[in-house]
Length: 159
Image 1: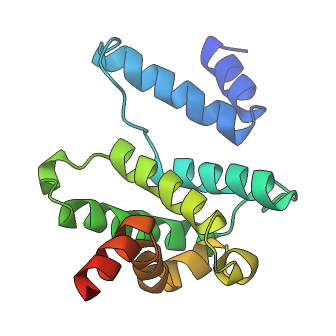
Image 2: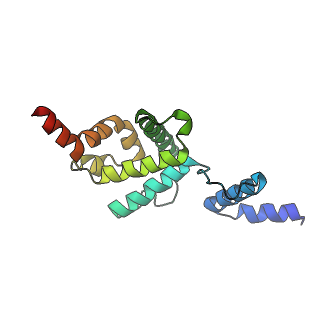
Image 3: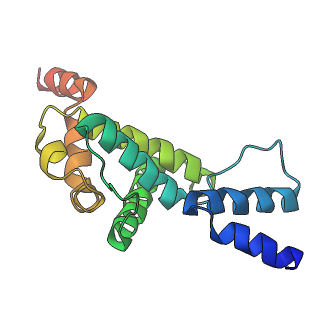
């Protein structure tokens, strides 16, 4: 068996997450950029992992018991991350300065905010990539309007 066949045999027995880590290590070694801050290589996959972790923590059950997400889940997660990036830009960030890391931080904040909403309907019934993506504008509006700051401002504006 040649060296390349041995490597291919070893890689073929690896789990998908191990393969991703291997590819990322190879790419990092090729660029020579070891001390620079790293952007997530696959933000949609990272977003799905983050969603699954929060889902597990808050609901007490696994979102994807087999560890595999559907194609539709990835599609809706990608769209949700894009929408969050758009909201970050609306808040004044330049499009060229919005990074995948910022989008993922925004996603984490959004997911945790949905979990903590007073109106638990979205958490109970729509806490899936599809539901969150489909209802994003409604959820975002509720989160923005129901914050303590927004309520206080509305109260003082009324006076």
